[in-house]
Length: 289
Image 1: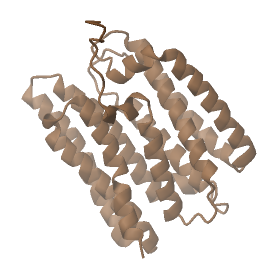
Image 2: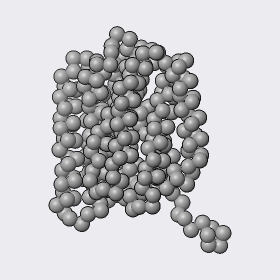
Image 3: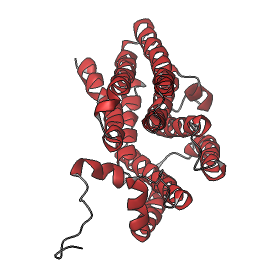
Image 4: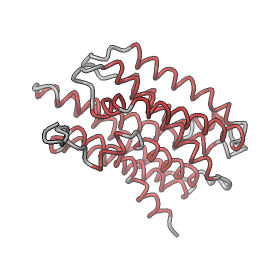
């Protein structure tokens, strides 16, 4: 404190969703709507969106609280970790209340078939948190397995809240749907992008920087190509906007990957979330009659 004013710089308002762990619930709710519209879910009540937002928020708070404990005061401790540590009690109380509210709505509002999906989701989430606990927090290696599990868990958890209302379909149908596969890969690449950008930012070696950029460019190109093929071959034209949204997300991540030197890491985190939300505009534009 100097002259009664805190010497800690105030965080910009655009960073608050990331600090409060609200970015991931927003992305999940947006894509849940896209899944429901694409699959023609006739009855999709609003409490499904509320449950998804609450559960995703609880998971992300838990992940950031765990990371803040494991990282301590190391250089890898980011603003979001320090923020959760500073307001730990508030986050724990909030997460507890949110978890109870979500559980109550699941038991009383969501079809009981959701518990079949929850078994798969639980394995993915358990695997993710196991990797988070037992992987070395100080290693410079990219945690690809952890990111794959995180992306798969996020995508499956989002899609299942729409798929459970398709009473003539089962879990296998969801797992092998091209919509789920493309969205899961987009989520995995979005999560991995942050680690790759941080890794490239911490090394002066130009070859390592180039390798990190290529490690994201190639799978994004494959995802974009696959999304375009699925869109063009779709017999049901209603699914085309979804794949064009996937293509847009991959393109936005590719642009960020090529221009990342212009932005701070905090900005890149926010822009990576924007790259997953903005494709909804393409979906809405192409879906309008």
